[in-house]
Image (tube, rainbow, N blue to C red; front, side, top):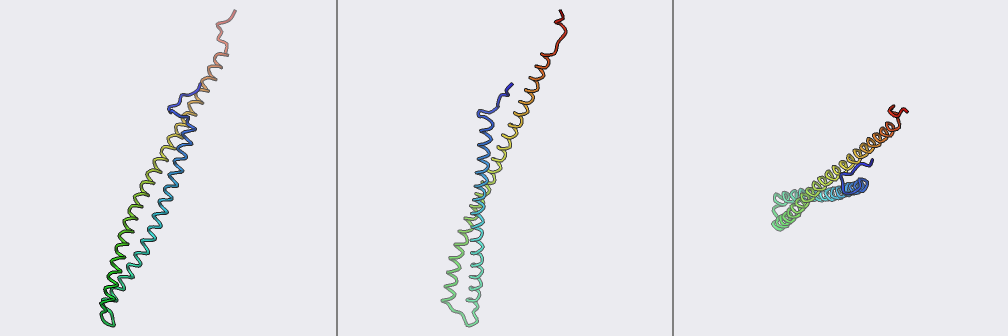
Length: 151
């Protein structure tokens, strides 16, 4: 009367394992998203600093009090350094976006596996109920007098 399992391990163990993997995937995604948000904040600050540097460049280039070569060189070097940091921050943000996408894919895969185990568990429960109903019907049929044994 027991239904045979299609799995090597009990469904309860698989359900626990895939539930744990699903929760881990959710946590990994949350951590990756937090890192991406922090990097986006850094990029925003660098973007503001870069726009301020460009405003300083414009002021140094067309200065009202005359052109100051020292200030012009200092602003140009600061802009070059800031551009380097900006490119580095953008590259790191791109890598973090790729990590977030990998975490989303892992989360979807873990979710699909957990759903599959849940469906198999539901199917196994149905099969067990059907087997139990058949066994009860066989018992009822065996208990019913057939009429051949009239003596």
